[in-house]
Image (cartoon, rainbow, N blue to C red; front, side, top):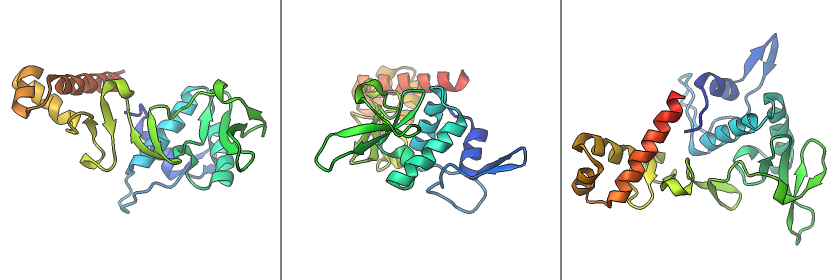
Length: 209
């Protein structure tokens, strides 16, 4: 769902060496079972997605690493999964309060200058926050009708109206031969099954691309 190859993610979370220089992990994963594998929590998943999107927007991995370090000095650990960090593809901005009772403004982490909120795109636009921390994620946008809630279904993507994992509904449609029959078997609205099938198809297309 985050369009990120496993080797790159492993380098980010374990650190890596390039031409004799060691690069520390971008952040420490929340889950470590001591078996030399990389496990992603809900917050890890969102942070990986943001780092990937920053690079897609045109920031170099070195600039992303620098931005994380600078932001960490201001907001503490794991700034990628807060609502305070944004990018426009050229710089990284941190939402800050210049005055205790004032409106938040965006500061360019690299130049230390302030920018207008309107010119900066939110990389976490499909994420809902509870305060500064991520709460819900709509992987393909709210219109898809599929969300990820770490408190339900072990963090699997679920159809929002029924809270049923989309994989289960999509598999049912395949097994029964049609969304209509699957909806009857599961006793759910036909639209819910169609949303699940459409989501699975889009995810599979992304993986194949």
